[in-house]
Image (tube, rainbow over all chains, first blue to last red):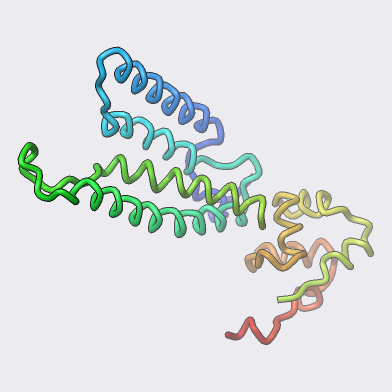
Length: 135
Length: 68
């Protein structure tokens, strides 16, 4: 069992919290699709809220074989995923704002914090699994 | 950094999984250390050395590029 000073204890959520994270993401996607097909409502921002929390639970939960190498790989994955998500967010914002200032919203468009967090953690999770099997 | 973990494992007739279990890490971590893809912490290096009954300097050695 990892001691309190062990690096593997950095991730505080137990491994089984990943299941809750997957359920949250699954329900968010189902509700998003239902709203889109039934009411023609496309609310990505609302869907990103539970998806972001689901990804938080998945990414920051302990791995089954958690040790100092998985901690190192998760940090490396965050170092890759967070800036990449920032670049993607800037591209999306630029594409939306290309026509100029929005009169409807009285502001320049910018993706929400939860949409950015979803992007960042999704990229980080993908990077982590890629690094885990590559290294 | 180079290491002689594979040689020491052969001397002690230990598999990667055996060594991993004794020092409390995954088999993939031991594999990554042997292939030089992952540098272990001081604690883990000392544990590995103790399992082999050797000083840590006999298991791990610095290379020129480690000083850069």
